[in-house]
Length: 465
Image (spheres, rainbow, N blue to C red):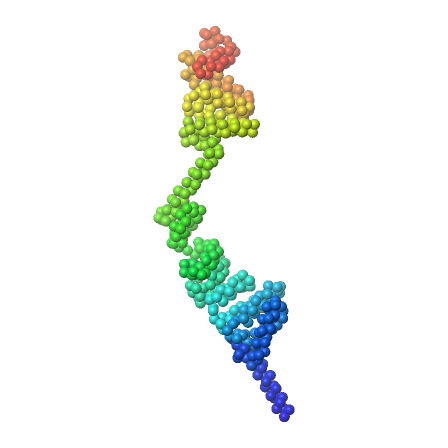
């Protein structure tokens, strides 16, 4: 009798052990299928209550039992898989031992697989699984890549948006590191974009999320697009973007450069159109900016007008610049004013042949900026250039040259920076000084003071060749 009882007890233990092993091997076992249904339900209720109270240690103990006895719970709600992943994610994030972290990560992934096997809803779960593997578990890319490919294969056009950005990162990394073929990378690139575009256009509920995902993964894929595709791809990609934002000149610049870089000829109609649009917009923007700048800086506007040969308009702008600067009173910049007057002197004297006015402007410039030789060089040049028309005789012309030489000498005396130029000019015009015979015939001695006829009207000291 005792032997029979012992055998019976052993049989029960053996049966229970077999049942536990069966449960561990069957991830879809429900507690209604367990010989320990009451115990399984009780463990479920207790862990859920502890979890609600945020007593995670006690909750985990009872979850382990509930999961061991009935992984699929009641077959209606996948709590054991979901809560199990949360438990192990907490442990993963706190753990410092890499071996244990790897073990916890594997458990989380297994619980995703078991839930999909027993409860379906693969598209959503693959999206969550990829998210965890990429962002939280930092799963190795080869392992993650297999999950990504399966997620897209099973999800098709409805693949979860959470899959797309991780796929882009893995694709770019694997391809750049020669761990993915050109054909596979190109195919994956196209598919990722197809899924995003399909849902942006057709998925009213989640379309905005797909758009956000595309906005994030586009620059990632952009890192390898140049190696994956040719001109035709980029034309197809950029044309709708160009049409949608015809004023975005920064984008146009990128489109143009990228297409040319990918082998598109500059004569291609789309390439040429984008280039023309870019240049037109930029020219307009620059003109508007320049107009604003010129309003604030009439002196700069005057210089531009001078360069264009619009001398009268340039003079008007220099006058405006002088008035604006002088309105500052004691804070006026004399250096700037001197520069404006000198520029006016140059225009009036060299371009408009108004010599007396030119001299007046040059002398104003010299007074505003002492020890500046350029105004005197300019006056000397005007004297020299007009010397041949100064008076009716050769003597008058020669005396005018002396006036020019005196201005060059004075420029040199106040500004050593112009000494070389002044010396060169003095040497050049000295051969046009009066001759002693001329002076003798007129009763003029060397060193005498004589007045220059014509507009110059200055008194000079006579010296001979």
